[in-house]
Amino acid sequence: MNPIPAAEIKEVEVDGYRVVTYSYGSGDNILLLLNGGPGLPCNYLRDPHIPLVDEGYRIVAFDQLGCGRSDRPDDKALWNISRYVEEVEIVRKTLGLNKIHLLGQSWGGWLSIEYALTYPDSICSLILANTCGDLPHLTVELNRMRAALGSETVAMMLHHEAAGTLDHPEYQAAITILNYRHVCRLKKWPESLMASANDWNMGPYGTMQGPNEFLYTGNLKDWNRIPDMHRLSMPTLIVTGTHDEIGPACAIKMHNVLPNSEVVVFSNSSHVPFYEEPLDYFRVLKQFLAKSGL
Image (tube, rainbow, N blue to C red; front, side, top):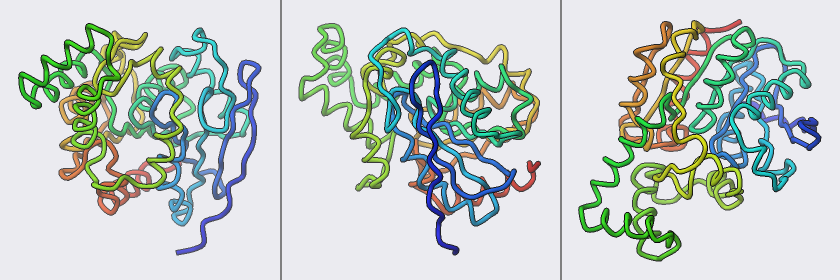
């Protein structure tokens, strides 16, 4: 394997603020990564994908406004998906990216769907990783996962959610169990994943999503693009894990409306198959990118 090149770091102005971008490799075969969150630095998704430069891809990622090395304004009006779509487009244009392979993971998948519906001509192929097109449907799936903890635990969680005592140790213990079942099943979480999680800006996250991965109360809670996704004709790869918090049921619902899509489920993964089953994940991703090239 060739040595991984150093990142080319550039700052892009978005809405008067500074957004920091990272680029590895060169050429026109570009994979743009949109990570989860919102409010989560990009390194957990960026770092495991950097070795794709050895396959001839230019890998581009950025810390979305409000996280990582980018500016962190304290303005709730900024935290809406339409503004983030325009942020992606400003980054793409400023960096001179033409047609891109767009990979969105988790929240980055919702953003990728919105971006693809708004700027379809900019996309060569779409990878929707560990994501969904319908958040009310996801809430049903999350409630099923919560129910697996047992009726007494569910009652406890509902009590704390109603009382607003989400920082109580017993509530946090239940969330920790859910995280280790449905976010990352590795006993020791990878360094890049932990670095991102420990630098999470809860401002955008709480405003748009909610207080944790298993309770949606933010401005995205009713978001549903399934009725519009038939318009996306580009080759699309949908990947998920059997144990994913945004699992196979969500993936199949997208697949059923996307006219040019395929689904791969990683049987031993939850929400981060690029860490949990990296050999299988990158084999699938590289095969898809090769046949969906420019």
